[in-house]
Image (cartoon, rainbow, N blue to C red; front, side, top):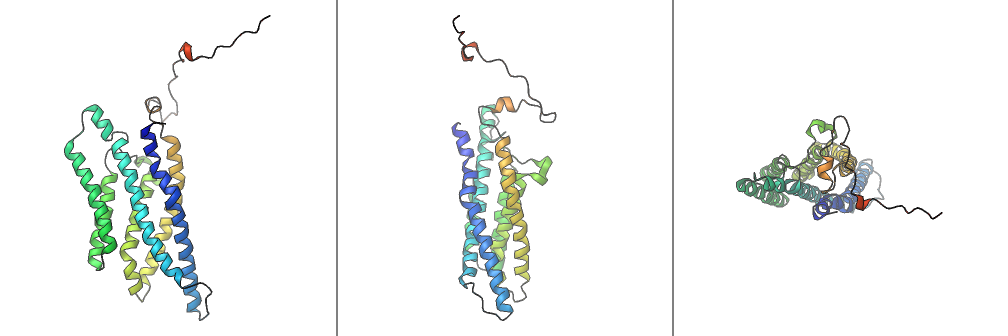
Length: 253
């Protein structure tokens, strides 16, 4: 496994080690928060401590940053090392410095917009910087090198990830409105959208595992990409050199 292949593992490693455990904790606290609210509404005394609401809020904010961050890491790797990415363009002599500068600025602007979104208090500023953060992800996602699987978008790891990240950004933008809205309208919107996001995360786990199996190591790429993906056939490999064929000794009579 080469250096390029090692960098490819950073995104799934962070997702497995940090993001998915965080999702489990957020879902657990969300369920406890809802149960405590229902028990209080019925007039009973809940055994669930009131701190679960704050823990759900704090971990949810962490989850949004983690999801957006791991998405940006995946996009950065794809834009640089992916098929038709910067490395390939440089090798073919088609790399444009202005495009590289634009993409670098887009990464910086997206990260900056997310940071400001965390700090914004007024609704209009939260809407503006949530829009800028989401737009940055979408623009970066449609650059050359990103493995999108557009012809099968309904089972695409990329599309699931982008939609899940956008839902997380939206949830972060409306969190203050949830606590101000006495009609619970924003709370219902938050619950429904995050249930959809949870299903997308499950799809992320499945499609991400599939893509790791399908994307070859760097030294295997030239042979793998010469295969016929429609008919599921590959060219017959050339026989190995004689020096690599193990010699079988014949036992003496």
